Every structure is written in structure tokens, then in C-alpha cells.
Image (cartoon, rainbow, N blue to C red; front, side, top):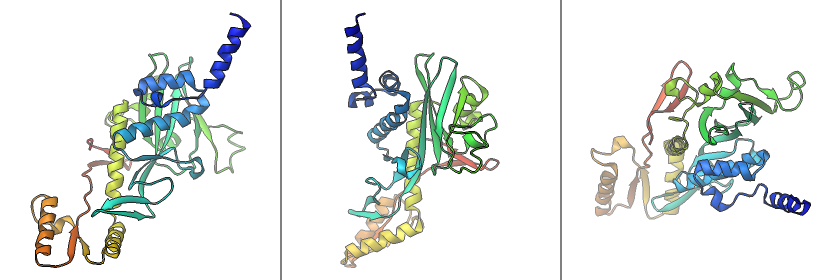
Length: 314
């Protein structure tokens, strides 16, 4: 190969390095991860992978947003109600868009690693001091057709497991003894005990909150978190008070009152609520009852470990 040909290839690689197109982001997850491996440097994986997941969440109706680095609380948030950047959440209630200065959310830190020739997965940039809820792990088996495995684990698993050794990226354990913001790394042997624990589900006594290690189970779990955030938000007494207060401020000709499930008669809530309001309007009373619907979510609690997971997909 001539020097000119080598130079052309080097310039082409340099100009296209770390460039992932919109077409790449719409690829199936296994193809995307192969494209990421070919086109990007390992240092950029942590920025590209969350964008892929956010796009897939949007297409599945899951509300998620990227978290800026200066917030120090993970990579993405699954939240309710919707937010625009760092502004307050907003949602539609009684055909009125409302905005409050709080949201209900779950924050997730994402880690991706490709299997090395030594059968090792490396997790770098572990910041235990950051405020988030879960680690999302994506391990790609480079020796098995780049097959990906996914796990969502509680934040403190990496810290509390005796089978995981956290090593400071800078300095020694002794030199960091007074440092509250230590950044760690760790290595996981492929097929080891801790590897199995990280990717085995709770049903199989592992740490993985997903039903299994597939991308489909990950998307379903994020959908569950989105509905859980909605339930926590709408079932909050203070939130309900604010909603009623704002509705009454914006609609001076009509008085809004919250109706809970116990106040509704038997039958479908929406039909019963409509009938209730129709009866009120028939008598000329400027009053309207609202009922904030929230999704039905089943949870399972382990009293011994004080942990939870979802029982069935919503």
C-alpha cells in the first residue's frame, strides 16, 4: 500500500471518528452497538449510548430526558410530568396545561463495555457520590458476535458487593481517604460469579431488576419506571392541592373539586365521573369534579434485603 493510500485512509478515519448518524441511531440495538464499536473511540461510548436509548424510549412513548454533566446525578432521567431542559414539569389536566416546580423521577447512570481479548469487562467512571437511583449496564460479548446483555441494578450494588473491587482511577486508596468525590473503576471477568449475579434476574437470585438480560426487557422496565413516576406524582397530596388551586385560579367561572376513588360509585371511574359532573351541570351549579388517574403497578418487596422490583409488565 502506497503512502498516499495510507494517508487517505488515515484522513478519512480522522474526519469520521466519533460520528454517529441519525440512521445509526435508528438501527436495531445489536447493529447500533457494532456501529458504535467501529466508528467511535471508547471515550465517546458514554455519550452516544444514552442518545440511542433516549430515541428508542421516545418511539415507545416513554418520557425520558438526558441529564447534563453539571447536575452530577446520572445520564438520563425517567420522569413525570414532562420537562423541557431543566424547567418545571407540565401536563394536561381538564384541558388545561399546568406547570409546577417539581417532578417525580428516576435517575439512571449508564455504563457500556465491550469484552476484551482477556475476557474482561471494564467499568470506568464509577461515581458513588452522585445522586442517582440505578446503574444500567450494557456488556457486549465481542467474542460471541457482539451479543449485548443488559442489567439494571440498584446503585449500591457495586459498592456493597464483596465480589467487586473498586479501584480509584487517580491515586491510591490511602491518598483518597479524605476525598469524598472519588472516581472508581472495576473489572468483571466474563462468566464469573459476579458477572452472573449482575445479569441474573431477581427471580434467579441475582441483582438484575430486569426480567432477563435483553433490550426488550430493559425498555419494558423503563416503561414501568415511567408509570411509577406518574403514580408517585399524582398520588401526592400536595400535588393534588396545587392542581385544584391552579384550576380554580385559571377558571373563575367553575369550581374544581378532587374526587378520590372511594367517593366514586361502582362502575368505571370515567363514566361515573362524567355522570356526576353532568348531574351537577344539570342543576346549574358551576362545579366540576376531577379524578387524577394513575396506572396500576404491582410491586414486590423483599423484607430481608429491603429491595423491590416489578412483578409484571405494565
